[in-house]
Structures are given as structure tokens and as C-alpha cells.
Image 1: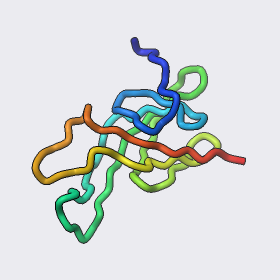
Image 2: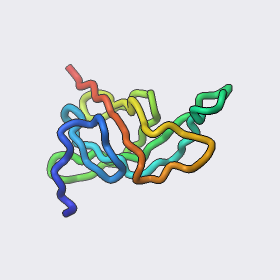
Image 3: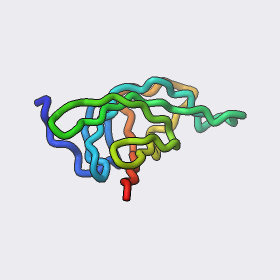
Length: 110
């Protein structure tokens, strides 16, 4: 159902899945941009991946936010970082939305 139990950690989260990120419950919703350099190509610019997210707050309220791969984003009492994305981009085919997996790192406040 809609209120599925969140994953116990945020190391392998699919789009639409909720996960505990060491405190906050987060949910990746949609890939806004995936301009990562394909792994079989040499790129001048590494590119980036931006992800639309939801922070599921206590009481069930949802707060949208956005993360960029490798950059820390303020969330709750700390910061969250989209640490890694799989699969790598390739030149020979688009990645289907359901094939993405995301790893997040949350650094809580003091």
C-alpha cells in the first residue's frame, strides 16, 4: 500500500521508495537531470544528476526538496548528500526510471 514500511537504511533506494536516512525518512521521486558522463566516454565535464525528493516529516507531512549528486543539502537538523547512483550512464541506452538506485548519507546536527 501507500504507507509501505520505509527501508531501514538509505544505501539502495529506488524511485518511489521511502527510506530512513539515519533519522529523516526520505523518498526519491524523479530524476530531474542525468547529465553524468557515460562510463565509456572521456568527458571534460563530469556532469551531474539532480533528483527530486520528498522529506516525509513526522505526522505524515511531505516537504519537497532537491539533491544533486555529491553535494550536501540542508535537511532537518543536518545535511543530506546523494552519495552515489547506479547504474552508471552509458552511451548505448537510456536508463529506465525503475532501474535507478540511490545511496544517501545524512549528517545530523549536534
